[in-house]
Image (cartoon, rainbow over all chains, first blue to last red; front, side, top):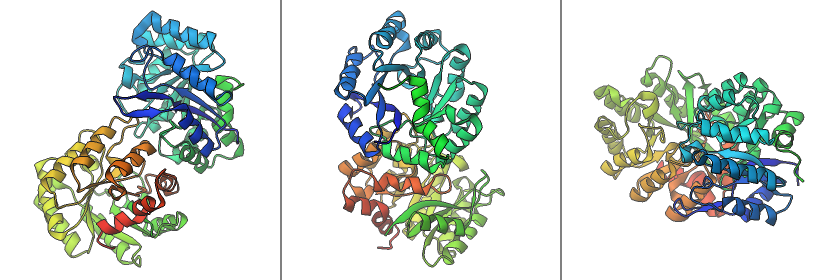
Amino acid sequence: LAVIVDAHLHVDEVAALGWRMGADLCIERMNEAEIEVGLIMTITDLPQFNPHALELILEACEAFPGRLFAFARLHPWYGDEAVRLLEHALTDHRTYFRGLKLHPVSTIAHPSGEDTHRLIRKAAELGAPTLFHCGDEPFTTPLAIASAAAACPEATIILGHMGGYFHVDEAIDTAERFPNLVLETSAMPYPGKIAEAVHRLGPERVMYGSDGPVCSPRIEVEKVRLAKLGETAEKRVLCENAERIFGEFT
Amino acid sequence: VIVDSLTYLGSSLFGHATSAHDVIGRLDEAHVDAAVVCPVKPRGYHLAEANDVVATAARNSDGRLVGFARVDPNLREDAVSELERALSELGLAGLFLHPWEESFRISAPLVDPVIEVAHRHGAPVIVASGYPWVSEALQVGELARRFPDVNFIMTNGGQINISGLGQADAELCLSEHANVFIQTAGVYREDFLENIVETLGANRVLFGSAFPLMDPRLEILRIKWAHVSDEQKAQMLGGNALSLLGLS
């Protein structure tokens, strides 16, 4: 397999949404795209809805050793309990858990909130980055997340989807102001904006992710290649930045 | 036959500019046979001039470009007369509406007079869809309910939301209105398209690149690499567009 790391994949089953994303489907789609390593996360926010989400993700990682690693997706409103769960994931199961995922659309927890900052700071203290869903909805725009980047300068914060459809320019502008922001490319449909982000921020600030398995990892890899970054920068975006930020995948 | 059911032609107020030469060059690069070309909103705001540009390009394209007319329903009777001119005199093949750029709600009654013109001409209507507040899928569906004999094609799968929150509305709209179809440009999640094909049929989905706003080399992969049958891919890549344009 080519050395590609997919920084944004989902494993979960949410009957209410009709969304089913298994670890085996992740691996199938990763293989189609010749992706070696993927970082998975749930769709629900621990401990809400599924209090056993960490175990679900652990089982998936253990079923595909060396291929799947993980984010702990947490709900900031759970305060001390959320912090305890994060600490548990990032210390007791550090082999697999490499980051914190926050999705303010599903949690309605604004990135400027102190409960959110506690989690981001705890992750940073444990050497792990925070991945935010960053799209067009209120609570998730680049400027909303910039408040967290400003409050937690020691943390690496990844803007998943790098602004979605209408906030991509704002994501690049914001990342220019805050050096602790990294842009992640998943589902955002403009290859030219990946090239622009690499040009303006440097190749070490842009990271490949697919939002798979239901967004096609193969199409998402092709999107990065269409940006024509050059071999060195493309390698950083597809692999090396993830290894630097999440640690070696062994 | 591969038909790109959505491209834009002209010099846009919003900064992008494409000529017929540019569009045909991209078609060749992506091995696409023909394309629907829609007018952009020009710097002077005069859509009639943009319709002239598209009509000229279509006439001189040896059949590779199929032009659509664009009007602003806010202009009421002027929009009606311009659409009549575009479909009758210019020979354009359909109507393109952009509720976001022209600032109107697609389900508002002021839209009806131009749809009546499209209906009389048997012309399909492409709606720039998925834009919040003005062209959400259920709002397009409301218009489709009022005009069951007109075919409406929603851009962006009828949903522009990278959380997937627009998908349920789009699926509901498509399931309730057999005269609504979707294009694929920039669509969030390939499983959304695959699910529509499986549950409602491949005939409801049309390949569209939205060039120059999006990249045809990427957009065509949403069909070519979809997990559906080759026959279904052929329908989405061209057969459905030919059928809706009356060219098959």
